[in-house]
Figure 1 (cartoon, rainbow, N blue to C red):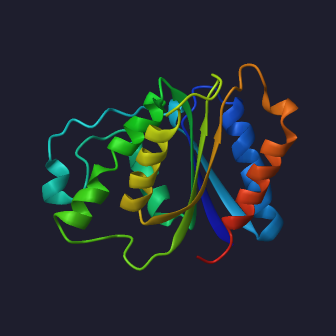
Figure 2 (cartoon, rainbow, N blue to C red):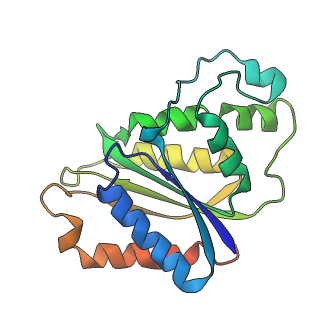
Length: 192
């Protein structure tokens, strides 16, 4: 059984991000038995990182909010999907808050020399969706942040799916993009 964690950063519970994630999960389930945990970041109460450096001393965040179960889910996952809409060439605020709050993983690894993910080989996929037609640099920032996030949580980025122009061309008219999502999902259950 492969534990797949889907971190959904869209404020729309049934928007393009969730449709793409469902296709990825269908692809994963076609290859292996999976257990899915979906975290709708917009539904949680997440306080932004306060840069207090408390985690530098303890390896844990001092803020007590809905991030606690997300930390647990990240550690327990065998595979991770990070999905976020793109606003002004960056990930949604919900997604970025969650990523910034993963500073304790960085602190544990680089300051406390205690990496919870040492020796783990876990795959991850990033999904970024945008309503605007494709423009230069539209997804660069989000792909870079996703890559660093995966590095901090011991995940190898095995692929990304970026979809633009969704306002004019919805997913219902893009079977090829949904097929790409399905195929990427198959990779989540393969050894890396």
